[in-house]
Image (cartoon, rainbow, N blue to C red):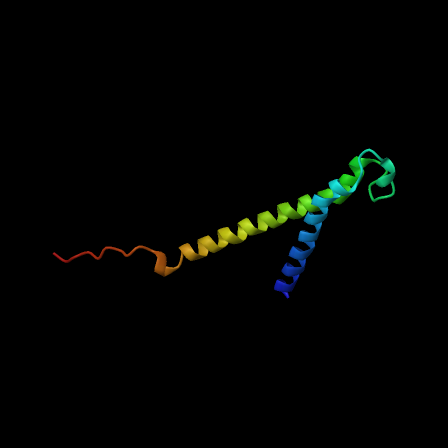
Length: 93
């Protein structure tokens, strides 16, 4: 169940990031009627906030999650017995 939720979250995050990248190219900054009826309208700053900020937040969360996962994987592999250097065996006198 957790893997399904993670996959759906990554899919939604990817969609939001793509929408944030495309939105500034879709609206016509010189023509307020092109974005006046959009969410966040009638001002361009509201439209960009509503359409781009979720993508920025998703990108940050996905980056943070990937860093945590890589750090956890690195710690786990560093603590395995195979990766520790062999200890010197003291010789008897």
